Image (tube, rainbow over the protein chains, first blue to last red):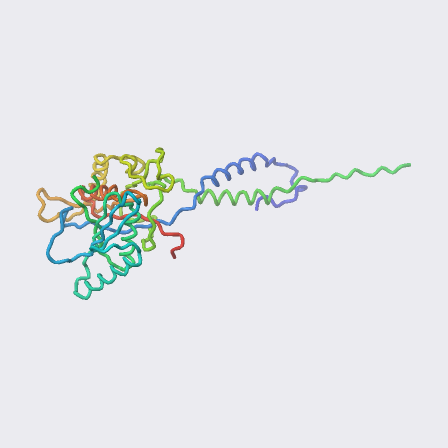
Length: 152
Length: 174
């Protein structure tokens, strides 16, 4: 590595102190700017090509699994509902969605979507948790409901 | 006659060579580890999900990243543990530039038009073509869903239908 010879062989002495100073400064700079990167990823949630942000297509037969999320301003918490049933725990929602999905698969409708119908105030993390549960159950078709006043 | 003892010249200077070696190695490590690239993404607390697909660094599919994050300059309760629902506290930014709904639509329209698909959407007059460019929405976990909805909606109106939503893997996840 750096310099391996005997000092007596080479009478020319190089003052390395300024170099060490500079290296120290550079080291401190890069150490301060060093950041351990968080592992990031993404979920694909492509919009349908053939329809806009219109309403549901068939109001008669139930061909969806709708998870509604409401924001309770008093408790600063999100309330989740599947149909009329309130679902607080993730495991419970997982069980319900799995059962409903398996029913649709038995009926030959494996593409039945999960529709996430969230209020605009609901934290994104809560919506993302539902998406995560659906992905874990290998439900590929996940749709975000958008009302007429979505995001306004 | 006193015998004069020869003066011993002792070299007590430390050998700094190993230290310089180590310093060089450390410098090299931190230089290579430093991320000096211009970032498309803003630092924020992304929502956690253990099922997410890992993002590849050099993906060939062109992507526009929209960040939805809280204004860091504002003193707000979100800085503690609360959830901010104040309008105007949440920012949309693309490549470090902040946008309103109108300017975001203009920017996304420009980005979308760069990579239009050949296929024409059936039943559209004048004929409309969708964009092959992906829209990645990176939103803070505490952001109101309405903000994310609005970005997705704007993406849809300019023909960007390949929407992806960014998240982070929990550190305990495999």
